[in-house]
Image 1 (cartoon, one colour):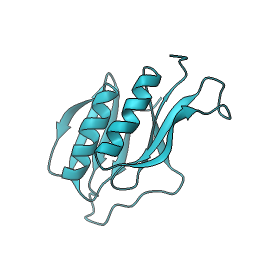
Image 2 (cartoon, helix red, strand yellow):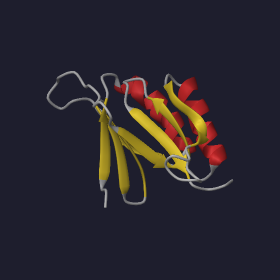
Image 3 (cartoon, helix red, strand yellow):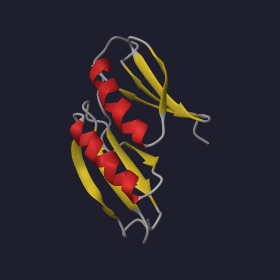
Length: 125
């Protein structure tokens, strides 16, 4: 069971603008913020965007990405559009990914810091 996931940022204000918009569409709400972090969540799972605690430059891991469960294909589509409108870049447009599962519908984006995130549903709607 996952308790929380964190990604690094070098610009918390820019990250907040991006994640406030993108995660709202997925049903996650900002629950806590400071000058160095923003925590989003619903129920018992926490997603956090943070500046490095050691004062060093945040960098992304190669091959690492985080997938958020979306309520339907329209939510995946909106996630992708909202991410691009708020400083994200395309890493795979919305669509079926039958190589994963016959019903796997997802979209991939890089946030403004280069973290790869995804919205996915297995719903046929």
